[in-house]
Amino acid sequence: MTTTTASETSSENKIPPPARSRRRFPFIIGAAVLVVIVGAVLYYFFFVAPYESTDDAFIDGHAIAIAPQVAGRVARLLVNDNQEVRKGELLLEIDPRDYETKLAQAQANLAAARSRLEEAKAQLALGIDSSLLSLPVNYCFHDFTLGAQNGEVCSLPDAQRSAIS
Figure 1 (tube, helix red, strand yellow):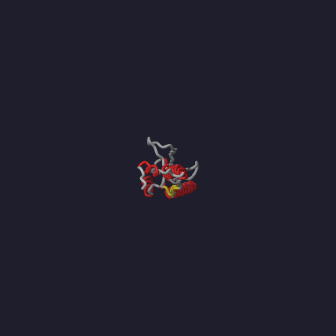
Figure 2: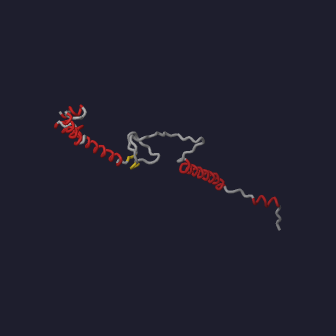
Figure 3: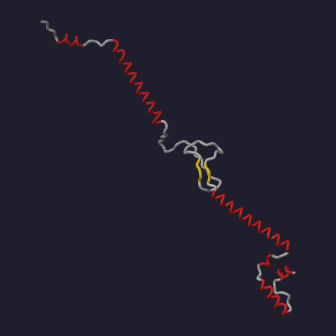
């Protein structure tokens, strides 16, 4: 029978690994580190970089106030939030119904004023004083009859009397 000592058994169990597996180990570790780095970079670009972050509640940007030249209700909005626009570009359309109504009313007032003007021109051509048209007819005839009894021509004010003659 062969007897083996404890020191011999332990030296036989410690067989050095083959040279090929020793060369693979750093390659596997390097590949794993590379996959983790690529994953971290992709995560940053897709989930972190698109969003602004700040420590002091200030974000760099250019905020420009705009104001319409006329007031009114917005009919159509032609831009989106945070969209870049150029000078002179149309941003929105204001509902024109209010202004069309005011324009029609102003045109009607203009037509009425022109009509009154033409009427006044026609009366001037006929020699009719428009201030006499507002007097009641009975007033003048009544005063003529009384004036005829008293020897007066008419009791109208001087300006109206001169307009008659």
